[in-house]
Image 1 (cartoon, rainbow, N blue to C red):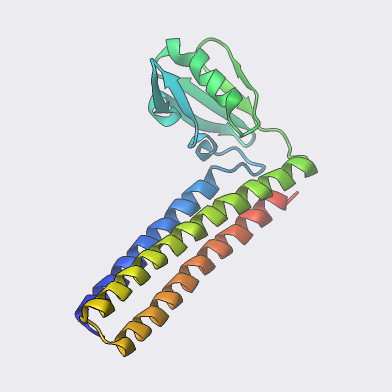
Image 2 (image 1 turned 90 degrees about the vertical axis):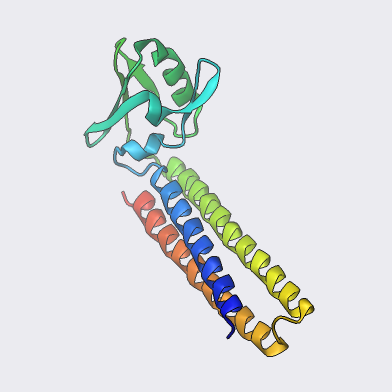
Length: 188
């Protein structure tokens, strides 16, 4: 295969891998039964008119197996942080003592587990869509190259099949992360 096609496929592989990593990071923000500081990664706080990630405004730690503590760097932001946590989809009720916000992680009910599985499936689908978008972009580039006469039909077909293998490999990775996360959520 030509160097140009190799570059295109390498680029596709790289972009697909980034989509897989992003999806895996999203999975870590979904609550299972244990306290993890990553649960709060997706929360943004309205801090003086700017949407700011919670991680930049507070120290988040899992002090016990079922307790997260959020210690704001700026004590005046505690109300805004509490409000953002309440409005998020994590389903936790914050309690604060004026300087620290505590989030007790309750046992997951069967209903909440099923809801979280749906959330995780949605995240996985977003990851798969991102990978398919990369495939679509590269297929478009391949067709352009063929149209311009820079690659032959055989080379284009070979590259398309390689691209499909890459796509299948990366969607398979997402699916395996999904099944692992699903198992973790449904584990009682």
